[in-house]
Image 1 (cartoon, one colour):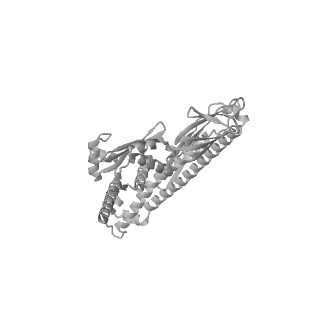
Image 2 (tube, rainbow, N blue to C red; image 1 turned 135 degrees about the vertical axis):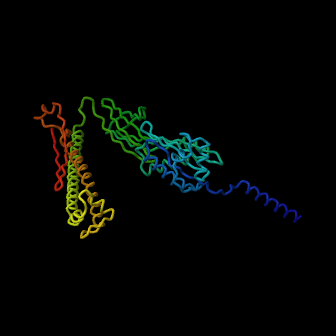
Image 3 (tube, rainbow, N blue to C red; image 1 turned 90 degrees about the vertical axis):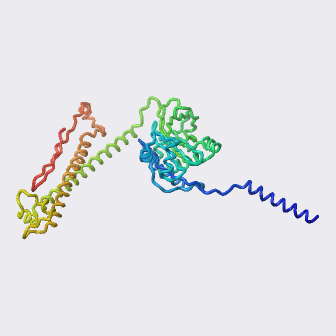
Length: 405
């Protein structure tokens, strides 16, 4: 009887181990995946940043192993003669080309002021997946881009059920709204969003750009816009103005003064830069003149025929008795050509920079005119004309800027 009990115990232990082996998940190797550069026609910089963010997101996934490589969907499609939208046959060719059975590919395009991401996961030996995200380009900094990459990758790797739940839980941020001490109604993107009490309200908004309006009886509508980031707070202060009262003159005056100061600073900065470039061009001209009248250059040039070019002969290795070596002449010729090219570049850029600065100063009408000149300012302003000119001579150079107004 004791043997029978021991046998039953052993049998039960074996059955328990078998059940544990069946119900316990097997440890699987991470899936090797490569990230192709996103294709874009009108958001190239954002596509490059998001591609790098997707690679970083893939490296953080425990069930993925990022395969190194810098492949572009656009280049591969052209090389393999694929259609504009790659089909299964083309995707299979791409997998063979990059020698990776799984890869992420997609496009990023601008639409209605937003960025539309279409991300796909191709698996040669399994089911492929796809997802789409729309977000604001204003939120395309490093942290926001990383967040978008994480969300897109999480959606594309999740099962259909969990993917549905992920989409249902739309990422949001919080708007902290203030409107003095007024009672009124809040409108978000044209739809009522609730009341505002004592000039304060907190609202949970979806990630992205939103137009915000506060409506108060007896006041003009106060409007503003915000960009909401996932899990972040954004503050918006609006100041409704009573009907019949003028808008705040101090704000308008401050804005005008700041704008005028900014324009004047930019104008004088451009003129200073133009002067510096002109000085660099003049220095280049003097260097060319100095090289052309160098004693070594003159002695070498005197030893060849007048119809021959000294630089050409020096490059050929032509030796002139009692003159410097052809190598020395070749160096002088190279320096002369370099400074000759630089003088035209510096003079041209200097004239453009100085002319732009002068034009800004002459046409800047952001500052309010004095009262005594109000009648004069009502006349149509005359257009200022700037005529830069550069004069070069063998031994001199000059810059002339004529302004007509």
